Length: 484
Image (cartoon, rainbow, N blue to C red):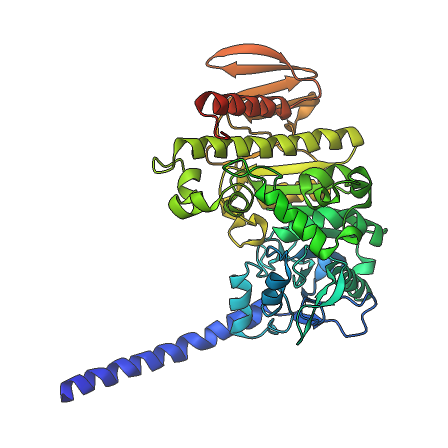
């Protein structure tokens, strides 16, 4: 017993020494990451009277910029799905996605635990580390807390959810209150503003991008949509369950005031369509950069899958083309990817006719909200280039990146902007593994050692992408008619 007690004492002493040496350095690391960061909760007399679901005041985290970035801003909208009924919103109102009360002040370990739980940390485009965020690391960084459950667009106001407390569906006023407060604290004098959002926040960015540009007339405003391109598409069995959910969301939160006015005029009989990027992005006049995965696991589960595929077959198995996934599901997933790509390319063509710079960066992966995570530098690349650099070229130089389009869905990213402009008007890129060079309006492809001429005037990579879409659709129809 004495020997066991001695060993126990030695172990406890070693643990104490370890804690004494490790914990202080950990606290120093946390305080360094939080330098200049604070949480701002608006007062009860905010100008637009915006509220969270539970009636608490909206809020945001902010870290001040320095050096050249002191007059530049990244304003990021947090994501987190939504609620479409009274019972769902009552439950949500008692969580961090329905109230600002649970959100801690910077300086505590619970702050980083909360951020990691919601994928909303100051990483990626919000990071202050130059290696992780080479372009925006010294900018003012703002993370807007998502607490209304209605895509920052609800305008229903307060109503009695039960006898004890009301619900406040005022997402549009809450976001307007936050932007007004930020303008009073330096955003109004900004030179460059990147207005970004993840998931549900990205959908809100698509709806309010032009409004942000109008609110800051003296600044260069551009918008980044990260993992927010949710399609209006049937599920695996051909049912329109996702569309019905969007319709309930629009009706319950009464979102007329929060959607794009031009889109609303174009869809008077179906205004709910303006909640989805494929319908509202054609009306956005501000430059937009779309980052999205062709098989985003969250988007696939929400818009495309069903309880059957989630319960009996892991959706990830289907995205990995595992033999455990039935053929009809794998075929249907390819059709979904083709629809997503076709929608993005159609918007891109429309934007070019309008003279609006629209950039898309699509990936064959299951990643969700790529740009706000710390590993975005090494996880995503285009022809050896990393996404942070692609984003920098788009924001400051507006020049297209080399186009890489797959002949079939497999790993790696590709960009649909149409080729990298070189000397003497030459455009070089890799399209589906082929080397391609365009001079003027003619193109030559080198496929297996031989050259073929092809007219590519005004089409660029989009021509190859559309061919890929058609091939996928024909392949799906040949293999299995999954709708029946």
